[in-house]
Image (cartoon, rainbow, N blue to C red; front, side, top):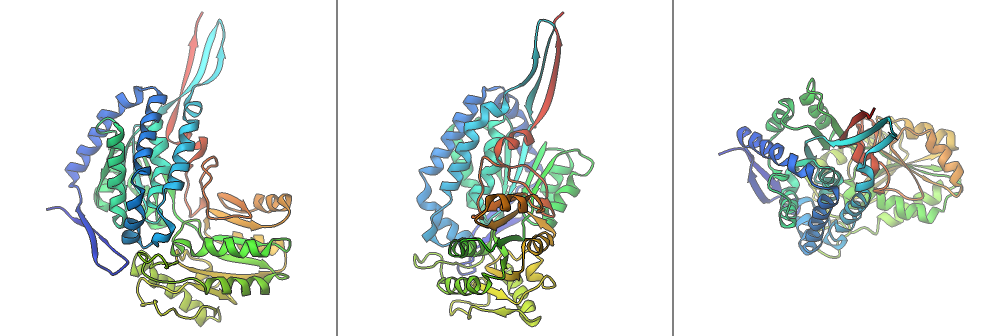
Length: 458
């Protein structure tokens, strides 16, 4: 028997499900089937590929009743928030709407003498290594454009959300994709590395930790296989003096606490102009105190357990270290806080960048708030970070917000919103967030390679 991969439910620490990982031989056989199926898939008209992917979307849309409950069991999100179909559907539908235009040849010249153009060729077999925190939406970011561009896809989903990969495989099978074009597999780290290092795939998309991204790049070293990574963030919010303070509090708190803070683009640190600081902190604390920590299967629960007790332990450690260094914790311990996966959401003040909670990714329900005197100080602090995924600016002046955004080391700049993926814009990052181009027309460019034609007619 091969290695057993288990999903431990954060609700009660029980084994929710387990699957046997593929042997190395079986994994290579899966990639061989993908390569065999990909050529005929790529030869289909774009419109036909898009139609089949849209059918899979319809299938997922018809099975959303189970989505919220299964996600609660697998990674702890409260059922009151439903599943992920709205975001899943929005992203897939947008990528379908631009597929034909994005993939058509770029014509340079078509005269009596020459025809010159650039076509987009699919990469071949795309390996998607998907995370557990938004398991449907993060996976479809790459799966949908990869398939519509003519690639075959191998999906390796996180152990915490094994059922999501299986449901996606069911959807694409029900839609009628040819056998081998989309495969969901359960792999251990060693087999995943072997597939990459031995060039069994042609492109890797990985969403996860910095160390995981480094492992992917090490496996691909010398193969020239492109590796696209999205490795998290320590995303800042900045509240200028001209901001709508009530809107800023409501949205930034949600951006920090939703999904128990387990979001790559969640708000983890907030900088507030000194004129608004005291009011902002008071309103933030009042709002966070209304959160109800508890079992995610309870409709009254507004914040569930973290996906794993060890994730919560890291957040507790960051909070404890900060308090020991002088930070002030404003939220009293919840009765539901068990010292394990169930963690009281926390707001910290009197923080600084010597504290890990303001430097390292927390990936949990904690946010530090600092007072700043002006834009210059805010920009310096926002850039004082190893990550660069998104930044949220709260202002009444769009020109000022854009000017600040131009100076930020980040992949996305928001004004008066946060924690959102616009499928028409490129999802990307810099520094230790990694590199890549998800969604938008740029996703199609990333998942294909250019092929130039210089045809002399006479």
